[in-house]
Length: 174
Image (cartoon, rainbow, N blue to C red; front, side, top):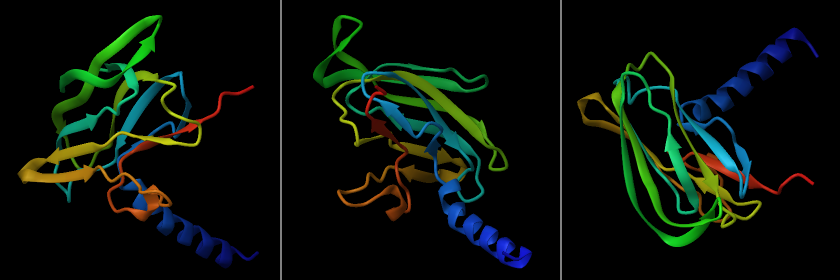
């Protein structure tokens, strides 16, 4: 293959990958049900050039025992509530917990940052399914990015303009 053709293929691959880089994503794309999962939300930019002032994430039903990581210079808010069901965690029945997290601070558009929390993916999630964590990114000037679209059956995150970050559930290693 010639250098020119390789350069063209590389440029095409970069163009195809670029839109995905614009989305809020999770660092680890897969996990096992029944395991602890460290969610690292990657925020690559602000909203149309405006600084990010708040990042809110909705915690899905079945992701329990959630503990966020505080960030220096940011205020952390935790919303707790009742779950729709009950779950087992370390031998105890759990019926309520964290439903939403938000970090408030200032992330200029020129910078990238990560927002971290961990919890347990219960056995409510089947191998092959994807667990979504809808995120709302609020920015200066009342600008907002809503990374909340959850793919319908037969669709993938690539089919949407503002997909929610998701983690694919895989079968445990044997």
